[in-house]
Amino acid sequence: MPKTNKVLTIPAPGKTGSLGLPYPKVAPGFVLVKVAIAPICIEHQIYRDHTFEWHEDESHLGHEGVGTIIEVSDGSKHSVGDRVVIYQGNPCGECFVCQEGLSPTHCMAIPYEEMPGHIGADPHAEIESLGGDKLINTPGGPRSIEIACNSESGGFGFSQYRLAPESMVQKLPDDLPFRYAAAANCSNGCTYTGVEEAGVKAGDIVLVGGIGFIGFGAIINAKYRGATVIALGRNEFRMELARKIGADYIIDPDDPDWLAKIHAITGAKKGCDAVFECSGYPYYQKKCLAAVRRYGQMRLFGFLVGSEEPLPIHLLDEIHNRHVTLSGSHDVNVNHREGLIEMLRDPEVQRATDLMVTHEFNMSDAAAAFEACLSKKAGKVYLYPHDDCPVSDTRAVA
Image (cartoon, rainbow, N blue to C red):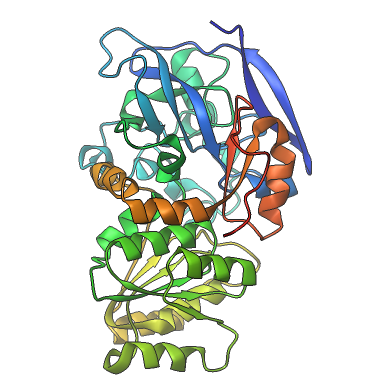
């Protein structure tokens, strides 16, 4: 048994480091996983700005991952040696969200309604003021899992060994390599539920706006269901990658005729059956709303970012007048996990995932990995916590 757990840290903007923390302790209801791959989500932004979301801090980073269970508690439904995907969170298991098999990151234990920026919340409140345990112990709170296990490490993904609630790991089929299972969170996974709930099917025309690794996941999900996909974006590298992954049409949102081109593709419907906004920028939110057909579906996958004002209220008339269904989604539902894993076994999905994963690095080279993300010439980027990356650093887009 190792004596320490190597954990990645971001101590300052543009800086990375590591800590040798005590080896994790396992409590009933939890398992310990030797992490094989820890994909990067938004941590490159933390590396750039040193500003943290409520669920991460400088030594609790990375919420995605796959690996092998190496320790369980008595009575566990899992076994040592199980290959698993780790989903983010530490849900209560009791609220209606948990009981109905919905997204654990929407568990009622998370005080979303009290966080700054939410309607009805104290506009002057700071996240820290939501109260020690109330924040720390929320599903995904930076130290909630460690507190539950009385452990000094293992609560997050950018570490060699990771603790996880039994309900948040899923055993993988023997024929599903870690490489493809690692996309089960914030790319192919978080978009699975939104695309599924939008009812996308063969023959539909969908638009994906704001292309990054979330957008690539939306494209992969839509193509898996037999849809025609329009990719809306400006980054040349990403748009070329979107085409190779499977987008049928590439449209520049700055083209004065962008909407006319969409109407030409969609014909008499004058809009797409479903649109997926994946950037969080109001610029793309407005474009996506304009592109959806009457009685169409619009899903928001991106968190609001930047200094732009969000959608003005008068645009809600667009939703009302055209009977558009608007919804948000940022995680895979528990009741969708089996379908997601089955999709990840599909050969065409694996071909697209190979393209989407443009860079792979040892965790000791995390700074280079974050710089690759910030270059905007990357798709999904993987870290290998045990410094056993199978490639030197990067794979060119084929």
